[in-house]
Length: 326
Image 1 (cartoon, one colour):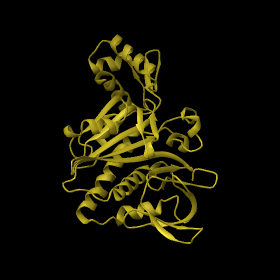
Image 2 (tube, helix red, strand yellow):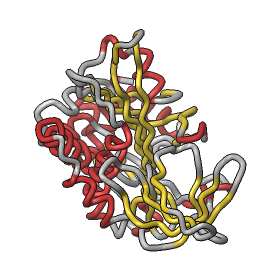
Image 3 (tube, rainbow, N blue to C red):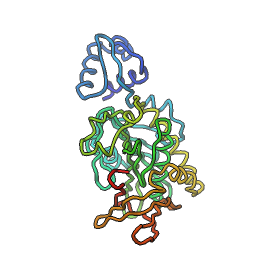
Image 4 (cartoon, rainbow, N blue to C red):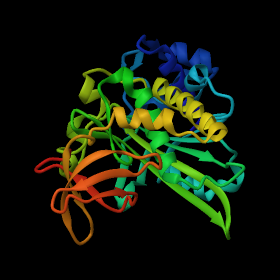
Protein backbone atom coordinates (compact mmCIF):
# COMPACT_ATOMS: atom_id res chain seq x y z
CA UNK A 1 0.00 0.00 0.00
CA UNK A 2 3.02 2.28 -0.25
CA UNK A 3 1.69 4.47 -3.06
CA UNK A 4 -1.80 4.69 -1.57
CA UNK A 5 -0.30 5.42 1.84
CA UNK A 6 1.66 8.27 0.27
CA UNK A 7 -1.66 9.71 -0.87
CA UNK A 8 -3.10 9.28 2.63
CA UNK A 9 -0.01 10.93 4.15
CA UNK A 10 -0.30 13.93 1.82
CA UNK A 11 -4.03 14.37 2.50
CA UNK A 12 -3.55 13.95 6.27
CA UNK A 13 -0.75 16.51 6.42
CA UNK A 14 -2.88 18.91 4.37
CA UNK A 15 -6.04 18.34 6.47
CA UNK A 16 -8.39 20.23 6.79
CA UNK A 17 -7.30 21.91 3.56
CA UNK A 18 -8.06 20.41 0.17
CA UNK A 19 -5.67 19.26 -2.53
CA UNK A 20 -6.14 18.65 -6.23
CA UNK A 21 -5.38 15.52 -8.19
CA UNK A 22 -2.90 17.62 -10.10
CA UNK A 23 -1.14 18.67 -6.86
CA UNK A 24 -0.94 15.06 -5.69
CA UNK A 25 0.33 13.75 -9.00
CA UNK A 26 3.04 16.41 -9.12
CA UNK A 27 4.08 15.81 -5.49
CA UNK A 28 4.21 12.05 -5.96
CA UNK A 29 5.81 12.33 -9.40
CA UNK A 30 3.28 10.09 -11.13
CA UNK A 31 0.64 10.40 -13.82
CA UNK A 32 -2.59 12.00 -12.64
CA UNK A 33 -4.64 9.03 -13.86
CA UNK A 34 -2.63 6.80 -11.50
CA UNK A 35 -3.64 9.00 -8.55
CA UNK A 36 -7.31 8.98 -9.59
CA UNK A 37 -7.31 5.18 -9.81
CA UNK A 38 -5.67 4.79 -6.38
CA UNK A 39 -8.12 7.22 -4.78
CA UNK A 40 -11.05 5.34 -6.30
CA UNK A 41 -9.71 2.09 -4.83
CA UNK A 42 -9.33 3.68 -1.40
CA UNK A 43 -12.88 4.99 -1.58
CA UNK A 44 -14.14 1.53 -2.48
CA UNK A 45 -12.50 0.26 0.71
CA UNK A 46 -14.46 2.90 2.69
CA UNK A 47 -11.60 5.25 3.45
CA UNK A 48 -13.13 8.69 4.21
CA UNK A 49 -11.86 10.43 1.07
CA UNK A 50 -14.10 12.90 -0.78
CA UNK A 51 -13.47 13.99 -4.36
CA UNK A 52 -15.47 16.64 -6.19
CA UNK A 53 -14.19 17.36 -9.66
CA UNK A 54 -10.46 17.88 -9.32
CA UNK A 55 -10.60 18.66 -5.58
CA UNK A 56 -9.88 16.00 -2.98
CA UNK A 57 -9.86 15.99 0.83
CA UNK A 58 -10.32 13.82 3.90
CA UNK A 59 -13.40 13.82 6.10
CA UNK A 60 -10.99 13.41 9.03
CA UNK A 61 -7.24 12.67 9.40
CA UNK A 62 -6.01 9.12 8.90
CA UNK A 63 -3.06 7.31 10.45
CA UNK A 64 0.22 8.49 8.98
CA UNK A 65 3.74 7.53 10.07
CA UNK A 66 5.23 10.94 9.11
CA UNK A 67 2.48 12.71 11.09
CA UNK A 68 3.07 10.51 14.15
CA UNK A 69 6.86 10.80 13.98
CA UNK A 70 6.64 14.59 13.81
CA UNK A 71 4.71 14.66 17.11
CA UNK A 72 6.48 11.84 18.96
CA UNK A 73 8.69 12.74 21.93
CA UNK A 74 10.29 9.43 22.93
CA UNK A 75 13.69 7.78 23.01
CA UNK A 76 12.73 4.27 21.88
CA UNK A 77 8.97 3.74 22.01
CA UNK A 78 7.51 4.01 18.52
CA UNK A 79 10.90 3.94 16.83
CA UNK A 80 9.98 2.62 14.40
CA UNK A 81 6.23 2.57 13.70
CA UNK A 82 4.87 0.12 11.15
CA UNK A 83 1.56 1.00 9.45
CA UNK A 84 -0.38 -1.66 7.55
CA UNK A 85 -3.42 -1.25 5.34
CA UNK A 86 -5.24 -4.29 6.72
CA UNK A 87 -4.43 -6.93 9.33
CA UNK A 88 -6.52 -9.57 11.00
CA UNK A 89 -5.02 -8.42 14.31
CA UNK A 90 -2.05 -6.24 15.18
CA UNK A 91 -1.34 -8.49 18.20
CA UNK A 92 -1.40 -11.60 16.01
CA UNK A 93 0.98 -9.93 13.56
CA UNK A 94 3.30 -8.88 16.39
CA UNK A 95 3.39 -12.41 17.81
CA UNK A 96 4.09 -13.95 14.40
CA UNK A 97 6.96 -11.52 13.77
CA UNK A 98 8.20 -11.11 17.33
CA UNK A 99 11.74 -12.30 16.63
CA UNK A 100 12.16 -9.54 14.04
CA UNK A 101 10.68 -6.78 16.20
CA UNK A 102 12.62 -4.64 18.65
CA UNK A 103 11.84 -3.27 22.08
CA UNK A 104 9.48 -0.34 21.57
CA UNK A 105 8.32 -1.20 18.05
CA UNK A 106 4.73 -0.22 17.26
CA UNK A 107 2.37 -1.93 14.81
CA UNK A 108 -0.64 -0.01 13.45
CA UNK A 109 -3.35 -0.96 10.98
CA UNK A 110 -5.89 1.16 9.12
CA UNK A 111 -8.27 -1.79 9.32
CA UNK A 112 -8.39 -4.75 11.69
CA UNK A 113 -10.65 -7.64 10.79
CA UNK A 114 -10.24 -10.20 13.56
CA UNK A 115 -8.90 -8.46 16.63
CA UNK A 116 -9.65 -9.80 20.07
CA UNK A 117 -10.21 -8.33 23.47
CA UNK A 118 -10.30 -9.62 27.01
CA UNK A 119 -12.25 -12.89 27.54
CA UNK A 120 -11.86 -13.65 23.83
CA UNK A 121 -14.27 -10.96 22.69
CA UNK A 122 -13.91 -9.73 19.11
CA UNK A 123 -12.61 -6.24 18.40
CA UNK A 124 -12.92 -5.23 14.76
CA UNK A 125 -12.18 -1.84 13.27
CA UNK A 126 -13.46 -0.24 10.05
CA UNK A 127 -10.99 1.29 7.63
CA UNK A 128 -9.60 4.55 8.93
CA UNK A 129 -12.21 5.08 11.66
CA UNK A 130 -10.34 3.63 14.63
CA UNK A 131 -6.87 2.97 15.98
CA UNK A 132 -5.63 -0.62 16.05
CA UNK A 133 -2.21 -0.70 17.67
CA UNK A 134 0.24 -3.09 19.27
CA UNK A 135 3.31 -2.07 21.24
CA UNK A 136 6.16 -4.56 21.65
CA UNK A 137 8.24 -4.63 24.81
CA UNK A 138 11.32 -6.76 25.37
CA UNK A 139 12.43 -5.88 28.91
CA UNK A 140 15.93 -6.87 30.01
CA UNK A 141 14.47 -8.56 33.08
CA UNK A 142 11.03 -10.21 33.36
CA UNK A 143 8.12 -7.86 34.02
CA UNK A 144 6.39 -10.07 36.56
CA UNK A 145 3.49 -7.84 37.58
CA UNK A 146 1.46 -7.65 34.38
CA UNK A 147 -1.50 -6.21 36.28
CA UNK A 148 0.64 -3.14 36.90
CA UNK A 149 1.53 -2.96 33.22
CA UNK A 150 -2.18 -2.92 32.37
CA UNK A 151 -2.72 -0.04 34.80
CA UNK A 152 0.35 1.79 33.48
CA UNK A 153 -1.02 1.51 29.94
CA UNK A 154 -4.47 2.67 31.05
CA UNK A 155 -2.98 5.71 32.80
CA UNK A 156 -0.96 6.69 29.72
CA UNK A 157 -4.03 6.30 27.52
CA UNK A 158 -6.16 8.40 29.86
CA UNK A 159 -3.54 11.17 29.90
CA UNK A 160 -3.46 11.16 26.09
CA UNK A 161 -7.27 11.22 25.88
CA UNK A 162 -7.80 14.05 28.38
CA UNK A 163 -7.89 16.65 25.61
CA UNK A 164 -10.93 14.94 24.09
CA UNK A 165 -13.27 14.71 27.06
CA UNK A 166 -13.93 13.39 30.55
CA UNK A 167 -12.66 9.86 30.00
CA UNK A 168 -12.60 7.25 32.76
CA UNK A 169 -11.05 3.85 33.41
CA UNK A 170 -13.16 0.77 34.02
CA UNK A 171 -10.79 -1.63 35.74
CA UNK A 172 -8.84 -3.40 34.48
CA UNK A 173 -8.58 -2.38 30.85
CA UNK A 174 -11.56 -0.47 29.42
CA UNK A 175 -11.64 3.26 28.71
CA UNK A 176 -15.04 4.93 29.08
CA UNK A 177 -16.62 8.10 27.72
CA UNK A 178 -20.22 9.05 28.51
CA UNK A 179 -20.73 5.66 30.21
CA UNK A 180 -19.73 3.72 27.07
CA UNK A 181 -16.53 2.00 26.06
CA UNK A 182 -14.31 3.78 23.56
CA UNK A 183 -11.09 1.80 24.00
CA UNK A 184 -9.69 -1.46 25.32
CA UNK A 185 -6.32 -2.88 26.28
CA UNK A 186 -5.14 -6.48 25.87
CA UNK A 187 -1.71 -7.58 27.08
CA UNK A 188 -0.19 -10.87 25.94
CA UNK A 189 3.13 -12.46 26.83
CA UNK A 190 5.20 -14.76 24.65
CA UNK A 191 7.65 -17.29 26.09
CA UNK A 192 10.20 -19.66 24.67
CA UNK A 193 10.38 -22.30 27.35
CA UNK A 194 10.86 -20.31 30.53
CA UNK A 195 12.40 -17.31 28.75
CA UNK A 196 10.28 -14.25 28.08
CA UNK A 197 10.42 -13.45 24.36
CA UNK A 198 8.32 -10.31 24.60
CA UNK A 199 5.23 -8.52 25.84
CA UNK A 200 2.64 -7.29 23.37
CA UNK A 201 0.27 -4.52 24.41
CA UNK A 202 -2.74 -4.37 22.13
CA UNK A 203 -4.90 -1.24 22.09
CA UNK A 204 -8.07 -0.52 20.16
CA UNK A 205 -9.62 2.95 20.15
CA UNK A 206 -12.85 3.96 18.43
CA UNK A 207 -11.92 7.38 17.09
CA UNK A 208 -14.17 8.41 14.20
CA UNK A 209 -16.67 5.54 14.12
CA UNK A 210 -20.28 6.63 13.62
CA UNK A 211 -22.63 5.18 16.23
CA UNK A 212 -24.73 3.54 13.52
CA UNK A 213 -21.68 1.57 12.37
CA UNK A 214 -21.10 0.01 15.77
CA UNK A 215 -22.67 -3.50 15.88
CA UNK A 216 -26.25 -3.35 17.15
CA UNK A 217 -25.54 -5.62 20.10
CA UNK A 218 -22.77 -3.28 21.29
CA UNK A 219 -24.39 0.13 20.79
CA UNK A 220 -25.55 0.39 24.40
CA UNK A 221 -22.03 -0.40 25.62
CA UNK A 222 -19.69 1.17 23.05
CA UNK A 223 -19.23 4.50 21.32
CA UNK A 224 -16.46 6.56 19.73
CA UNK A 225 -14.55 9.72 20.53
CA UNK A 226 -16.24 11.43 17.59
CA UNK A 227 -19.71 10.56 18.90
CA UNK A 228 -18.78 11.59 22.43
CA UNK A 229 -17.19 14.92 21.51
CA UNK A 230 -19.02 15.92 18.30
CA UNK A 231 -15.75 16.52 16.45
CA UNK A 232 -13.39 14.63 14.18
CA UNK A 233 -10.40 13.07 15.88
CA UNK A 234 -6.81 13.19 14.64
CA UNK A 235 -5.49 9.68 15.38
CA UNK A 236 -1.86 10.72 14.88
CA UNK A 237 -1.97 13.24 17.70
CA UNK A 238 -3.56 10.63 19.94
CA UNK A 239 -1.06 7.86 19.10
CA UNK A 240 1.96 10.14 19.54
CA UNK A 241 0.64 11.47 22.85
CA UNK A 242 -0.09 7.98 24.20
CA UNK A 243 3.35 6.63 23.24
CA UNK A 244 5.04 9.65 24.82
CA UNK A 245 3.15 9.27 28.11
CA UNK A 246 3.68 5.50 28.06
CA UNK A 247 7.46 5.78 27.73
CA UNK A 248 7.63 8.25 30.60
CA UNK A 249 5.64 6.03 32.97
CA UNK A 250 7.37 2.84 31.81
CA UNK A 251 10.94 4.11 32.11
CA UNK A 252 10.22 5.77 35.46
CA UNK A 253 8.75 2.53 36.79
CA UNK A 254 11.64 0.39 35.54
CA UNK A 255 14.08 2.76 37.25
CA UNK A 256 12.20 3.26 40.52
CA UNK A 257 9.86 0.23 40.82
CA UNK A 258 7.32 2.73 42.20
CA UNK A 259 3.86 2.37 40.62
CA UNK A 260 2.38 5.31 42.53
CA UNK A 261 2.58 7.89 39.68
CA UNK A 262 0.43 5.89 37.28
CA UNK A 263 -1.72 4.13 39.89
CA UNK A 264 -2.78 7.52 41.26
CA UNK A 265 -4.07 8.38 37.78
CA UNK A 266 -5.97 5.10 37.63
CA UNK A 267 -7.58 5.74 41.00
CA UNK A 268 -8.46 9.35 40.25
CA UNK A 269 -9.95 8.50 36.86
CA UNK A 270 -11.70 5.28 37.91
CA UNK A 271 -15.37 5.07 37.03
CA UNK A 272 -15.81 2.23 39.56
CA UNK A 273 -14.26 3.43 42.83
CA UNK A 274 -16.75 4.58 45.45
CA UNK A 275 -19.74 2.82 43.87
CA UNK A 276 -21.53 -0.54 44.03
CA UNK A 277 -21.23 -2.95 41.10
CA UNK A 278 -21.99 -6.55 40.27
CA UNK A 279 -18.94 -8.83 40.14
CA UNK A 280 -19.83 -11.57 37.67
CA UNK A 281 -17.79 -14.77 37.56
CA UNK A 282 -18.49 -17.86 35.51
CA UNK A 283 -20.70 -19.42 38.17
CA UNK A 284 -21.89 -16.56 40.41
CA UNK A 285 -22.90 -12.92 40.60
CA UNK A 286 -22.31 -10.79 43.70
CA UNK A 287 -22.67 -7.10 44.39
CA UNK A 288 -19.69 -5.30 45.89
CA UNK A 289 -18.58 -1.84 46.93
CA UNK A 290 -15.47 -0.84 44.96
CA UNK A 291 -12.96 0.62 47.42
CA UNK A 292 -9.73 1.29 45.56
CA UNK A 293 -6.90 -0.11 43.42
CA UNK A 294 -4.09 -1.44 45.58
CA UNK A 295 -0.32 -1.15 45.06
CA UNK A 296 -0.21 -4.34 42.95
CA UNK A 297 -2.87 -3.11 40.52
CA UNK A 298 -5.60 -5.29 42.04
CA UNK A 299 -9.16 -4.07 42.62
CA UNK A 300 -10.13 -3.89 46.30
CA UNK A 301 -13.83 -4.67 46.85
CA UNK A 302 -16.12 -5.33 49.79
CA UNK A 303 -18.90 -7.82 49.06
CA UNK A 304 -22.22 -6.56 50.33
CA UNK A 305 -23.58 -10.02 51.22
CA UNK A 306 -20.72 -10.91 53.58
CA UNK A 307 -19.05 -7.54 54.26
CA UNK A 308 -15.80 -9.29 53.41
CA UNK A 309 -13.06 -7.32 51.65
CA UNK A 310 -11.01 -8.98 48.92
CA UNK A 311 -8.50 -7.98 46.26
CA UNK A 312 -9.52 -9.02 42.77
CA UNK A 313 -6.60 -9.81 40.49
CA UNK A 314 -8.26 -12.13 37.98
CA UNK A 315 -9.44 -10.48 34.78
CA UNK A 316 -11.63 -13.48 33.88
CA UNK A 317 -14.73 -11.79 35.23
CA UNK A 318 -17.09 -8.94 34.38
CA UNK A 319 -18.09 -5.84 36.34
CA UNK A 320 -21.51 -4.41 35.59
CA UNK A 321 -24.05 -1.91 36.90
CA UNK A 322 -27.61 -2.86 37.82
CA UNK A 323 -29.09 -2.38 34.36
CA UNK A 324 -26.30 -0.77 32.39
CA UNK A 325 -22.68 -1.23 31.40
CA UNK A 326 -21.21 1.03 34.11
